[in-house]
Picture 1 (spheres, rainbow, N blue to C red):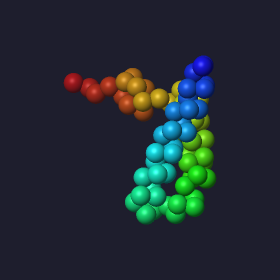
Picture 2 (cartoon, rainbow, N blue to C red):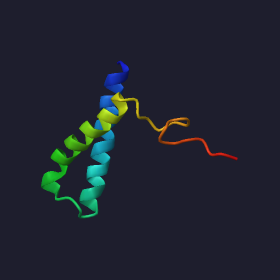
Picture 3 (cartoon, rainbow, N blue to C red):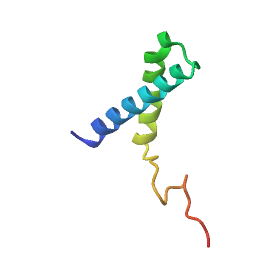
Length: 66
């Protein structure tokens, strides 16, 4: 399994969890859960492919100045 396979799997799992919570919170209709998860997984995967990952030193998470 390469990094792209891992990223795809992670994106799908995370997106499904989010869609499931949106259904549980009555924000999303159950009939729309799968399509919402597919759309979210695609967006999450794009972030990962572009190297936008939650890690210290990322431009999105600059180190605090003392």
